[in-house]
Image 1 (tube, helix red, strand yellow):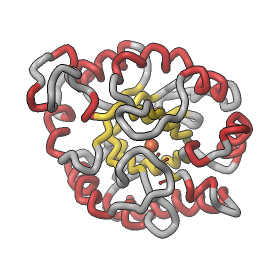
Image 2 (tube, rainbow, N blue to C red; image 1 turned 90 degrees about the vertical axis):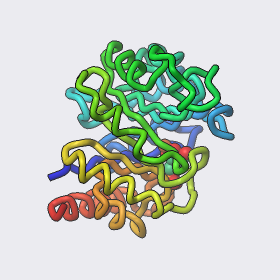
Image 3 (tube, rainbow, N blue to C red; image 1 turned 30 degrees about the vertical axis):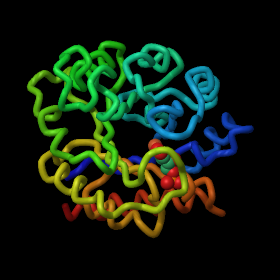
Length: 251
Ligand SMILES: O=C(CO)[C@@H](O)[C@H](O)COP(=O)(O)O
Ligand SMILES: [Fe+2]
């Protein structure tokens, strides 16, 4: 059976003028993790905020007492140079550093396939993140086939294997976009091969789309506009959790 449901509201849809209070309130409403979207204006056509803001909001939410525990800061790094920022985000309070596969290779290579530099490979970056004492996640955009992950997930070196895979269900860059059901076969394939893996979906998740994602096998659910735009965010969080927990029993 897949791991338990983890509901991770994306604070991209929160009121940025009151971020600390918004984060604390969302945790009180039943969130497990907070999903923190970091965008640099290069990897994606949008800019959010950096480590100093993460450090400030960290003080409004209790640190998790165990890996993957309540209060985990799940930092989704939509940035062109993921290795450069690991230490700073760890210092700021990031618990799970999720970088994009597409950004992990040396910037000198024109495409991941051209990269032959082991030091800048995804597995080297995962090892580096683990060496800082935090969890590592790897994300793929809609245009990236899931097959690129097999080699990374099958690595016999535990330190070089990710703790979570994020399958984007929108093109990264903005909240409030339409859910892409076309990405769900990636989740199905991942779940078939890795029954115990934390598989996160991000983009367009809410009451109308959760059942499809849960049926495919996703257990970590990011929801921004569906939670922060709801009249009753606690009800939406509970509904997302119920869908995942019920459906995961049938997988
Ligand atoms: O990473 C991203 C967007 O790039 C997401 O985390 C969004 O912020 C999710 O927002 P909704 O689609 O749930 O509104
Ligand atoms: Fe995200």
